[in-house]
View 1: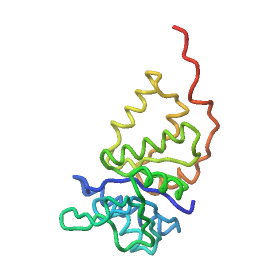
View 2: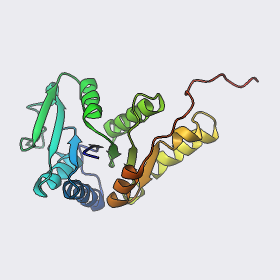
View 3: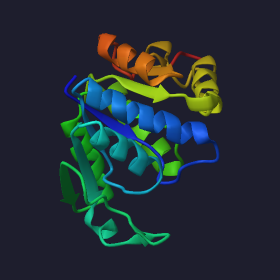
View 4: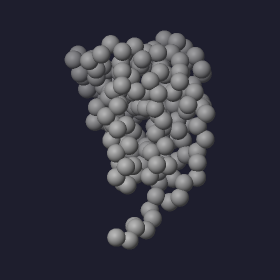
Length: 199
């Protein structure tokens, strides 16, 4: 893979492990010659993963909506000024579409609503057959345990097929997740729309 998109929080989180693993992921991407694609931010885990990748000699492409350029959070500019390339787009929708276009795989670090939304949208696109790229969760400090349990519950209650649940890879360590993404081979699944069972 030449490029991986990372979804992550614009906050750093409560545990030091979140920043440690974000930095580790950035360095691993650089060491493997994989460009980082992300939301273009200079704050939170976004800033950590980008800074680590850049410091290790990696390439980083940020994609940010025009409405966020020039804003500040706690005295820091939202956008990252030191990237390999920063693309400014017209909307959040355009941002997600552009990141998806650039990337050959996706990783979600811990984050909040924005990270959840990006993750589930890219999974939905995979479920619909709009792309066949691997999607993974970096489950740092078991942060995503409740979310993974929810996915399993959706399968148990027949709102999600097991094949579609398998679209979401998860590992606790960056190197293991990168290996899983590299080894991923998309499977052909039946169309997600099918006739409901007769009651």
